[in-house]
Length: 172
Image: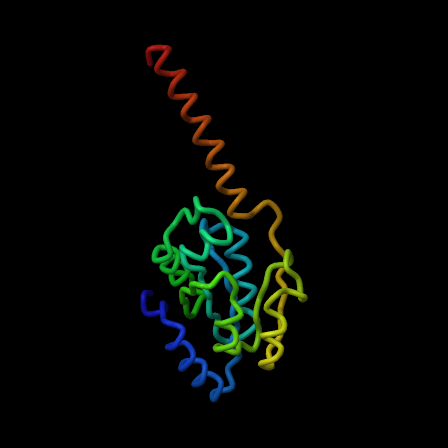
């Protein structure tokens, strides 16, 4: 499983071999902080677009910069291992930029997958198409987002705290 976690330089070499074998390389990127059904379905659909799925994982530093100082919930090493454990994921690497264009320019995927919230006119489009690739858009699963999962967990934790407090006041 840990052998799926590679550096970008290693993946560029792997990509060259796959290209010679006429294998279709698919990329997707994100923070994948709190893994949920929406992620699983998106990754499965991404894998179905080609032969090899490479996941670019935002580093902890980049998430703090573009999402929140309080995120990620899970550190980059744990998140990379979560991704590597998934059967549909062939390789994972961690990138430190807040945008994926630098790694996309190096990897030159045949297909880059994005969620429908970004659409085909996403920021990656020019880089991917310039290198002969295309953008594939996956429809998001309603009700599943990391932000929503964190909100639900916080709400449950508060309710459990109240329940324990009430229970202790009743002498139980």
